[in-house]
Image 1 (tube, rainbow, N blue to C red):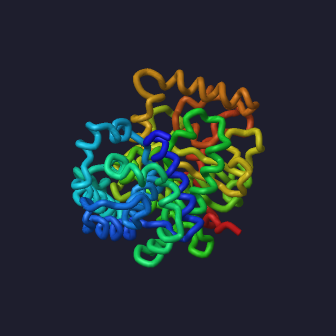
Image 2 (image 1 turned 120 degrees about the horizontal axis):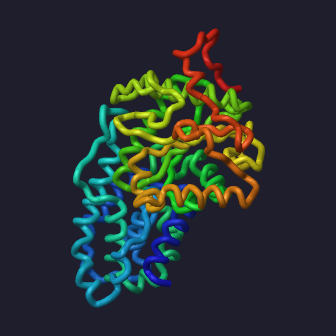
Image 3 (image 1 turned 45 degrees about the vertical axis):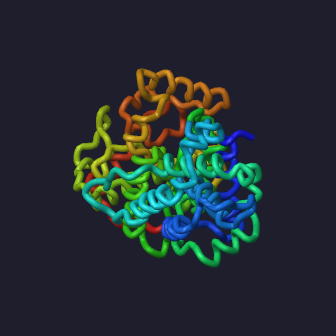
Length: 395
């Protein structure tokens, strides 16, 4: 198996194994492990089953899993003579320190700020690939059985004992993310399986709607900070099924959710004051525009906005800056890509129609019939109607 395949397969295997073993990391635990490994003497000979070497591979692959890292060109030549020179063991301490620095940046992202924080740190995409390239170049015996060496009892025990996760919510291990990925596997959208996604914290009925919106806003801000650097595609937010028991109820929930986010927008956007049915309007938050897709239990199984059998309401947020990087939506390919997606849905009897829905936000929700009129969720904004009572909590 070539190194690129070992990386991609290992990322998935190790992530699932860590979850089963109760040995998953959060950023803080990964930082501690990276700093501990940076202090080791990597120039001394090591056996294939050396525990520090296995912990290093675990750190790389588990971090790659949490951040959806893809294999890149650093892994194509790392086991050649040139690669062994380019990726010496002596670079491990510095690259591990860099990994800790980037993880610390993500771990310390503020709950909210007027704009997304940024710096010149290396991405986890680059760092995990580089570290894996060093392992492959300098420890070929270990690399020959890297998955087996990582997924053994000694590694899980060492992680649980010395580098235990303390964060209750790690997006890639969240129930929302795990369930949403099941929907991604079933969708007819041809681009969905290649995306990088996270799940927000679950809706808590005991806290009330506004408190849940605030919690989601914090998750959205962190996601957007990570997404811009690591090229993620979207964040899923899961609410109880009762929030989408009808298309009207889903429209009301959409309006109330966006109005709640707008009230706590750290950049102070007042975008909801001017929303109508005309093209060009964008929902703005934290200084960035974005697209929203709503899924609800009101839709039948053959509808593209059915949550694929899961008994929840889903909102999927995609900042425009991630869409601008999508190869299918740039260089004049957007209309071609949209037609390919539509054809894929139509082939399975899940038609939808954009006639009369030229405005992007008219596609946040879909009507029950493919050729039905746009669902004007903006008409449900609290400022546009006399509200007799607040949106009730789900039961």
